[in-house]
Length: 126
Image (tube, rainbow, N blue to C red; front, top):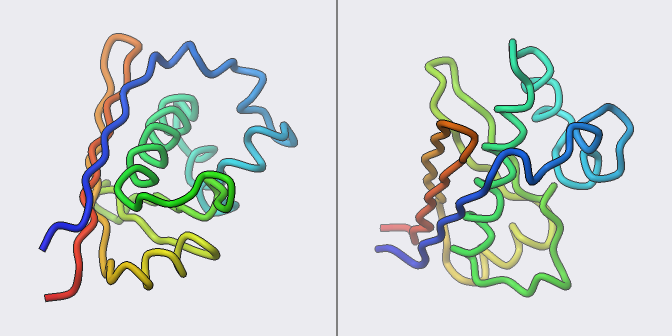
């Protein structure tokens, strides 16, 4: 059963290039080490970072969590071997999802012409 839905739509240029450089506080507070590694292995890391940022915002919305007690790097969105994104939660967001009975969050990400769209659904166990 669906517990929550979330979507996010951003302009890629709303995230400055300097924010995506190694050591930048935005990058470090927003993306996990594994996400940074996966992004930096891409021909255009910026596309990866922007889609993941929108994805994290969409996932956060599905959870209905208090933004004061959660961090975006507690949401990890990694591609599997086929390129499909998968969500893993950590820390306070994982605890919140567990309390809400959320067992899985599915996500889809797309971008074109400088815009990113993310859509996420959180589901409880069947």
